[in-house]
Each structure stands twice: as structure tokens, then as C-alpha cells.
Image (cartoon, rainbow, N blue to C red):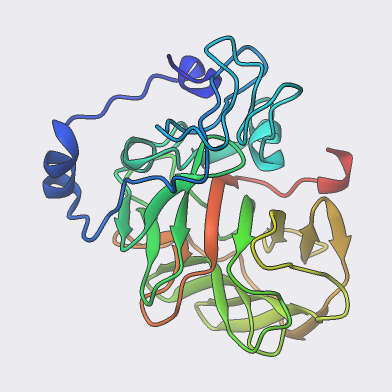
Length: 297
């Protein structure tokens, strides 16, 4: 049965079986097995249930969809980033991360995407991708078509994350990145515990850092992370929100003096980084073409 998101958009996967998809995408070390301790809820009118599983230790609802991930009745658990994207304007890109097909052909925006070293596991909304090993990442092209998947000039990224470590752990976590040509935009949890948005856009470099006392990320506990940026018009600004609450930070360096161009062909964006351990389980990655007030959700 198609999920409610899949019913809203047509998703076409042009490959035959897992091995065929690996050959087309160049995906290496991709795991499809779901942990046996997580049962599978059905999908229903309220939203998606849990990911498909043969486990009976933690069952979900049947095809009627009353049970969400983890089983039982009541409202399904969903990622707030997905709930907003379903009715919002200015969505440039949206991948549910519900398996390889959702990476190959996102619900909104351009593919194909690629997964390196990750595995698909039950998440808040269906499945998500676990990125925890060195070099684990999921990424898509930025500028292979018009409109592009992302604008450096202004926009927002909204995702749900189950971090592998607490924000106070002495380890860095690469949550989101964009790279192409002379421009880079990144969202990282640093080894000092800060949540940092950094940019290097042509000749302009800067960062916006939220200190470790201003927010909380618990290991293996779901959190919604939203970052907006406005470099095109005044007042220029970056905002960071955790679970729908804007958290204050400090600017270092400068905002771009001129409107930054979009990344050149070959630019990519996504989660994880080649030289670092992955951030944890990522579910529902949404990119907007303009900032929005997350507190109004």
C-alpha cells in the first residue's frame, strides 16, 4: 500500500531489485535489514505507520493504519518536518528517506541521490537512514536542473535527527552540508557542544554558533532541527531552532556582502561527511527556497 506521501507524488524507480539499484546509483555497503526489535505498523489515513518488518516483538497496527511505528493504537508518530512540508509553500526539495527509492527519486526536487555506507531503519515517519560510520552520508545534486534543489541566497533546511551522541559529547556530528564551486554552507554539532551554521560563499566567510547551554540533544532521542538563512536582502540573518524553539546564537565573521550565486554543476548537498562519523538517524530532509517562521508551526 502506498503511503500518504507516495499517493501525493508519483515516485518512479527505474531499476530492478536491490543489486540493480546499487549498479545504477553506485551505492556501496547499503543495508536493508531492519532491527528485529522494531515491529511494523500499517499505513492508514492518519499517516504512515512503521516500516515493514517480520518481527513480532513490537507490533503495530494493521492495514487500517491505526498503529504507528512501535505498534499500538492512537495517533501515528511523525516527523514535524514532514508535517509542515505536506502543506507548505516554497518547498524546493523533499526526501522522505523511506528507503533507496526515496533517495533515488525524492518527492520534490531533483535526483538521483546516493547513499554511502548507511542503512535504512525504522524512524519517526516510516524509515530513515542511519549514518554513523566514518564517511557515511546521503547526498543529492544541487544544480543539475532548473529549479535547483537549493539556493545559497536564501532558504531553510528542516529535518528530524536521532543523534548517535549527546550534544555535549566531545565528538563532531555533520548534520547538513552544501558544497559546490567556491561556496559551502554547513550545519554541524561541534566537539565543544555548539550547534554551528557556517558559510564560505565566494569571498565571504562567517558562522552562527549556538552554545551548548542554549539547546539539548539527547543520544538516540528524536529532535527536529531547522535552520534558515537570508543572505539576499536586509536584514540578513541566520536562525536555528530545535524542536520548534528558536535558540539564540552569536555571529562570527560577516554575512555575505553580495547575493551569493547558486552552486556550480557538480555541487552536492545532504547529511554526513566523508572524513567524519555520521550524525545518527536522519528522517525527512526538506529544503525550502525561502526562510520561514518555525515558531508558527
